[in-house]
Image (cartoon, rainbow, N blue to C red; front, side, top):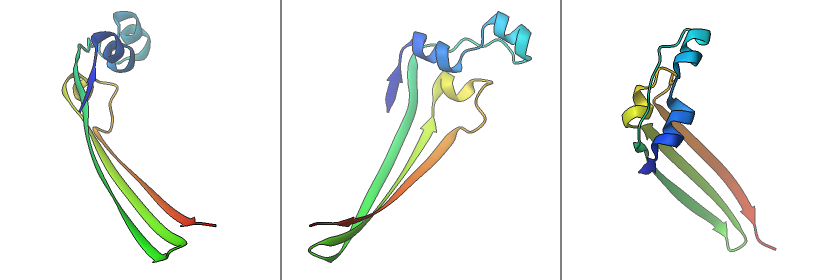
Length: 88
């Protein structure tokens, strides 16, 4: 889990009254708290002592005030990496 203070959450997820008036979003005050939780894993297959293939997959889920922000479209994200490595 990632904890964020009120200043961070306000900067990334809050909407001031001035911003709301200019953008059409509703004003929103994001306070301190857990910003997201993350999980991930990896798997490596060795073809031989010099060559391997590694896959990494991760997921992140917004929480609390960050999740409720009117700026947020996707409350979760998935990332992945595939690496082919060769030792010399």
